[in-house]
Length: 79
Image (cartoon, rainbow, N blue to C red):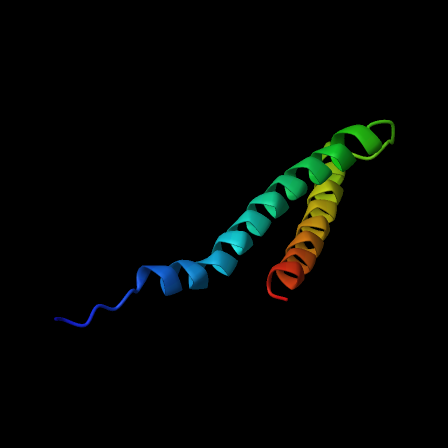
């Protein structure tokens, strides 16, 4: 009788954090887009800043929000 080794179970178990981190990156991408647009289009719309300045501020805020979401999401997944 040959020896049977089950590799599917351990591989699926090892891939679970990777799948969760992929979800974290997807959520962070959406957070970057939404927060950047919210800041540049809504919160700064009544200011006398130029369009490029509003866009740069929105990109900066979006990047910061994305990094925070990735950091705390990775902390939650890997604990």
